[in-house]
Image (cartoon, rainbow, N blue to C red):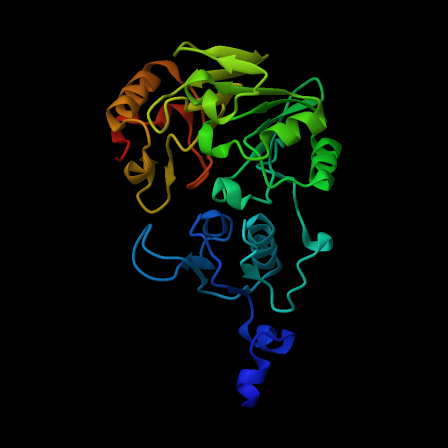
Length: 293
C-alpha cells in the first residue's frame, strides 16, 4: 500500500485537506446557507449538485461560520481540518440577529432532510420551538437553558414531524399541527383546522398555507418573523421569494392560491424557512407578485 493510500482518512490527511465535505452530504442546503462564499454546489447549477468547500477560512469570522455549518449539518459531513467537532465549538442555540428573539437550533436531523428549526423567545421568558432538530436529551436541556421554558412545539408540515413528540414531552409542551397533516402526527395535542388564522399565543399566529402539503402552515410572530416550513423561501441566487415546484406534494395550484391570499393577509420581515435561504426584507418590500415558481 502506498503512503498516499495509507494516509487517506487519517487525521494528518484530513488536516492537509483543510475544511472538507464527505460523500454523505444530503444536498439539504443548510451548510451553504450558513457559510456562503465558502461552501457551494459541487457541480451543476442550483439544485444541481452536492456541497463542497470552495474556499478555506481566512478570518476568525469565517471559521465561526464553518463551525456553525458543521454543527448544523444533519449527516456531520462538513469536517474541520483536525476533525475536532466537539461541544467547545458548538454555537447553538444561536441568535438570528441582535434582538435575539429568534434562535437557530442547529443540529438538523437527517429525518427531516436537514430542515432548519428555530426557537422563538417570548416576552414572558417562555419560548416556542418551530419544527425540530435531531433528538438529544442534552440538546433539549440546552435549548431551555438558553431560550426559557418551552411551552409549544409548532410543526409546519408533515415531513418535519420527526422528534416532535419527544421534544414536546421533554419540555412538557403543547404539540401543534394542521388537520391536513394530522395523519403524520396523530398524537398532536392541538389541531389547527381550516384556513382561518389561529392564535397560538400572544403575538404568534398560525396561518394555514396549503399547497406544499395539505396541512402546510406558516407561523408568524410579532408581524416580523415568518416561519414558512417548505411553503416558500428566499433564493439568494434569484433575489426573490421562491417556491420549490419539484417538491410540492399537494397542489401547485393550491399553493398559488395560498400565496395570493397571503398577499392580502400576511405581514412579516424575516423569511425563516425549513429549507432555503433565511432573509430579512422590510415588510413593504415583500413582493408576492414576484414569487418564483
